[in-house]
Every structure is written in structure tokens, then in C-alpha cells.
Image (cartoon, rainbow, N blue to C red; front, side):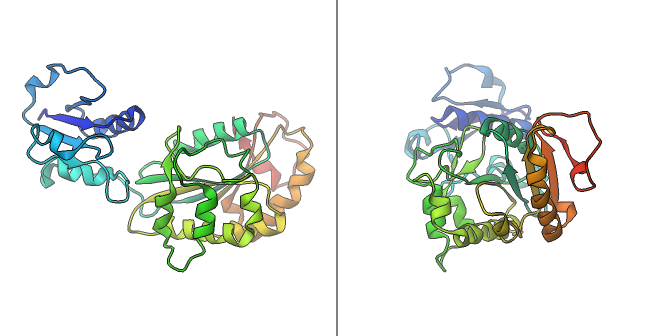
Length: 302
């Protein structure tokens, strides 16, 4: 059954994500945005029309004349829940099911590479983070190494400062996030260059524990990817204790970092377990000699 979905959203990037997401469940639907696209008659064969509106882009009264019950795009917290949209677009009996994991995952990336190599790896890693309601990125780094700057008032410094409050709940992390250019929800960088380190390891550990609680909650499926840089090796086992997976990114095999990385890999493997640790090189090396059991489990990152 063909029908039309009109999405009133000024943000072209958010609209493109919604069109792709909803289109995968409704391949026969005409999905249009009257705010960004010219009107056409492609929907003349539609059996009915549903309207989704973003209150930040248009008032409900302005679209009420095109639909008896327009659907609000965001919830009270400003989040977009596609599963709720699906349930309101079609009758319950016809709602397509979204395959979701029982819980999300908390993944940490410890990079010893240039930021562009790191972010290419994260971009590839994002393709595996499917089926969740949200994918969150937290940069436990200096401001210079966190490439995305939020245009909103939220930032990583505010999140780290507020997360120690007894009233702070794991799901409150979402309130500090906005979508970046790659599709992650993130608070962005710190306000000042070294806030992550100046605020102390306890705050970062608290936030990581809250992120673990959020990802392992069965109330909603959330993935969190944490970029971890610049911490003392002795602090890492406690900081990463709640992670499901830890990726260590190293440069080329002959770059000399193996000697310094060997102790870190051994320590984390002993603390977290071998199944949670993966070591990747930024450049492929065909040589497989001269590495011990811990270092030989490496694969090519980019």
C-alpha cells in the first residue's frame, strides 16, 4: 500500500537520515520535505498522507491543515525515536519490526595515531553499531584532538562536571549531546583544552560507568563509543572496566611503538581479559615474525 510521508524539517542532514531510515521500512512510500523540496505530484497515487513535523522548524498549526493528526518528530528531550515514529505512521498490525540488540555496547578506542587515521577507523567501526536507538561518541581527549565543536551550549566539560551529581541518571547523558557530521550523538569537545585531565580521573571514570549503565540497560538500546587519550596507564583499567570492547590503534608495525605498547597491552589484557582487547595497525605489514602471542592478534585498521 503506497502512502506519502511529509517531513517538515529544516536540517537537510537530519532529513536525509530520516528519509533513509524510514525508506528502509517503507520502500513504497513517497517521502518528501516541503521545506527543502519543490512540490510535485508523485504522491497522486498515495492512499493516504502522514505528516511528521519538527517543532524547531515549523509550528503544528501550520501543518494541521494538511493532516488531521500531525506527528511530532522529537520527544520532550529533543530526541528522535524512530521506533515510536513507525508505530504512529501505520496501524499496529502493520508496523514493521526493528531488530534491536538486547542491550547496547560500550566500546573504547585508544589511539596512538594521527586524528584523521583515528576518525577513519571510527567511521568504519560505526557501520557495526547497528540496530540501536542511538550511537553516542564521548571524546575523553584534549580539545585539540576532539575535532567536532558543538554550536550548542553543551560540551564535554559540562557533562563531566554534572555527572558527579547524585541526581544525574545514565540517560541524562543524552541531554548533553547533539548530532555531529558523521551521525554520532556527542557533547563535542571540552570547553578548555585540558579540562578532561584537569577535572581528574574520578570524573572520567564516573562518566564511563554511567555510559556502561546506559548501554547495558534494557529500557532502550544505546551504543557508546569512547575515545580515550592522554591518561596514565595505571588509570586505564579502572576507566575501562565497564567496556565491552577496547581497540588499541597503533601506527605501522615497524614504527617502534611496539616496545612502549607491549606493557600497556599486557596490563589491559590481564585486567580486562583477552576477549575484550583488540590491537590494530594503521598500516598493513606482511611480516608476521618477531611478535609474541599478545601482539600477534592484530589486524589492519585502515
